[in-house]
Image (cartoon, rainbow, N blue to C red; front, side, top):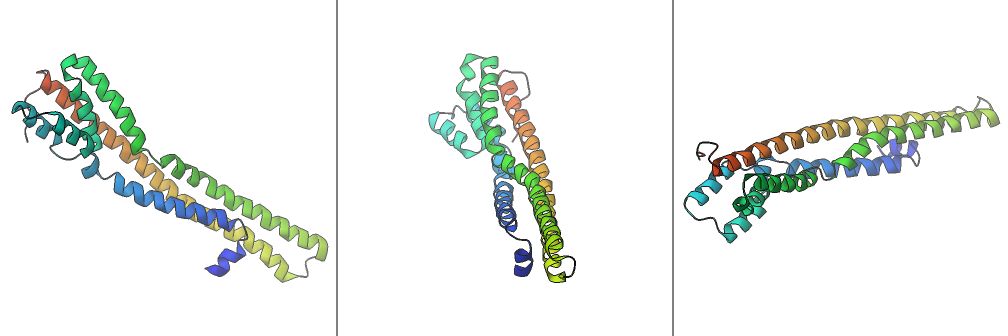
Length: 206
């Protein structure tokens, strides 16, 4: 492995750094985007239970807001409940936009890594081929070791760049899809609460 790293030349350093960053983001997003953390089960029903039993106060709203992203959206709507349905929905949508930004954290970086690592590999390929042609120009084709070094640099960097880019792209698409699903689920849950509070839907069951 070390020999391969050395064979790739200096371009291997940014490629390895990209791989470490990509791995860290994948682990962090995989943990942060768990459905149980973002949209806890029966949260809307719990909120309705508080309202029905006149237990919803500032402390419970504060707890709700900090409990989960869905809780933050619901709390934003409940604070503006007295101002009517439209104001409540607007508050939920505004909180939802902020929540989406937090769910998409680091995904741009992950997408960038998926795009630049093949380019870094290609750069290594170009540098390696330049070295090969320089050796041919100066020494001819007789020095096999010098030619092999340049060819090695070209192939190793390309292979490494693609090896990192492919799984990074897969995870980027996976997390994008998960964010879309979670956002849709939060919107549906928030809409349930709005409709129940304004008598447009049957009472929520636990």
